[in-house]
Length: 77
Image (cartoon, rainbow, N blue to C red; front, top):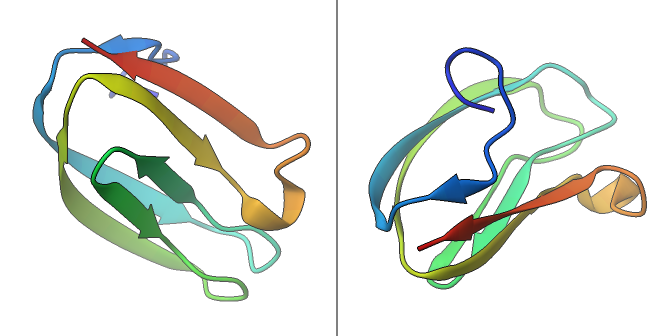
């Protein structure tokens, strides 16, 4: 989601700062794509900030333990 809480479906290729507030011991946040593999861990709850460089392609964000339902993608152009 963007800073206003709206879903992000497309981004321009460049470097981004990603802020994650992982508030659940049952879940985590995993960001995957070309050259990017960042994740929080279960059962940790944490606030993290990552700087990632996104290149053209499709990226996935998910909760690995629940990826059948807790998953999304966005495209970088």
